[in-house]
Image (cartoon, rainbow, N blue to C red; front, top):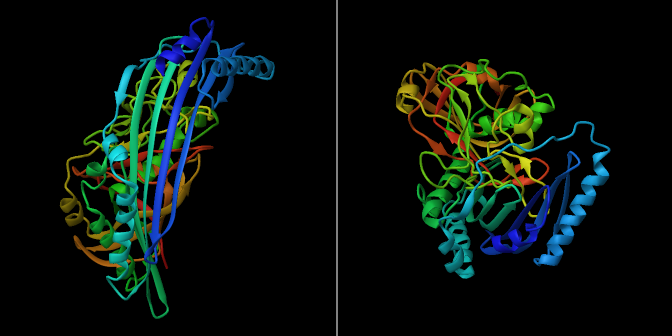
Length: 461
């Protein structure tokens, strides 16, 4: 495929970027003792971007042929010509980048190719059936499996020349428990970049199901917390949600240019000395993070970007255009969901760097607080203000975990929360690899980190 793309660019002048993509997504969902839904979707095509007259032109084609791709190039050039007069600030040129060259073949492809549809259906159906009959308090249990396989080739007139393939499986269980007039839910999901050995490395399917069901049942006997500013220990899943939603988006350079809270803060303190935040296309610490990509959709190697170092804001996330505007190197953060999408600045794997404490020490050193685990949903805006719902919250009294609480929300300003961090654990976990990030188009990402002690506004009674 790279050879075909290079052949299409052989006589082109100026900047032209060709991005071939083939994507297959398959999913199964079981409930009430049967497979309720299954789907298979395939998309293949080439996206074309040109930089002409100081602006972008974009076109795409679902036909993989030299004539069709060349016609899309002409269409993209025409689009740039038409839109150039409407663009007040021209793009002078694109900076040099650490371009990827060659093939990058991901792990887990044998699982995608060799495991049968029947095996995947049996996985969700078997787990669902066993969970549903495990307790008479369970009103319903749903079990789902999804996998996305994609391969891309990115070739540009200024040096990118790469191909990569990856597979991303996910597994999730949702449970609802009921007792008299009380009803509670519990869920647990995982998503990775790799095969089944990576997906079920920490927990097998039965353990994932047991955790979701136990959460729903245990919450039936839980109570509401008291509200107010509280000391909390955040699990890696909550840390991941916080750094992705409330911080990561504010440092995407297109949002910075639009006036996010991070604008103008490079070199200033935004967190305590214990806080270092990174975003990487590589799965740091151990393999399998759900947002792992070797090459971004501009053909740039996706190296680690240090966003915050010991509390000081060091970098934004850039594509080639914003890197030129800020006078820095691209960070390999341009991503497109499908061939017909224009690449946007997106996160990959976002995380806080581990510290020197242990979780046991953190709990023992907390006289009065809460341990928060399992994000449910939430929102954040460009000011860094956030509100998240928490699935499981445990009271900490005199250095010991006590009762389980329900209906807990946390809110605050993200950079204030980082300023209040006073303990960071050695333990580390990727824990946000299932589902998608939305920003005009979906993206597979991951987030996580260590356990972190800080202060947040807790919603309760």
